[in-house]
Image (cartoon, rainbow, N blue to C red):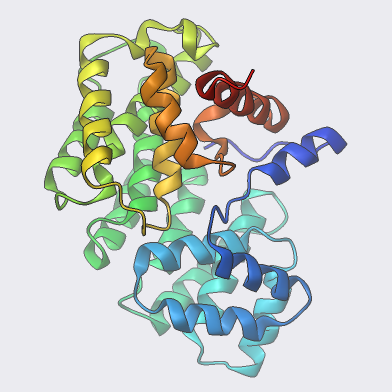
Length: 319
């Protein structure tokens, strides 16, 4: 995951705002708005209500942490309730986001996340914060260790698996296409070991997209994914079919990050040339686009959102 881009111009800011990390979580959107006004009690209630739904908790904390004011309000909350694991977890996640934007020291973020983990030993969310940080800044051994900490607490953690796939895909970037690359084995094994209704069934598609990002950035694939044969080989077709068939059977309407998976799958089906299947997925996505994979390999937010809108218009026949 590359560092965030420099400050956006007006058109790029609009595009970045169009990619709303909250997706379709209306309760999260309400709490985020309240936090912007200094009403951290709304976030307190949200996280209490979320409980130990770890994927949802990770999603909500990570989205809230992206706001520039969150660290300050989380500190106020922690002053009012020094033993609050929720406040400590939110502060750690917010400091991670600041560190990734070069606005704070990474060691402060690490310390805050470890303090949160001590307050809530069963919660994978502070470890998710650390994994987000070290996915960009850390060495390979540390990334694997943090992933294992998360899996120990929640074996099917959705976001953590996506982060690991993105990191693994970057191994041996300069060697060119390799159907036996380890990122494929990792994703296939995770999908096979997960319960039948787990959205990790889509992880092999994510691995395929992440490897395309790396290969295209290294000059081994066209920068327009539609022109790349990466998506139409035998292995790719098998991966896309298995994931689409899983979606038809299970769908997982209640999973907080299901729209992330649907964006990856819709993008893959579009690149594969499967218009009807991509249209069904894009219809279900609606306006809830995600930067990945529409930004791959190196589109800025404005271009990525335009790519999503154009793909949706073509697939749904509205051009």
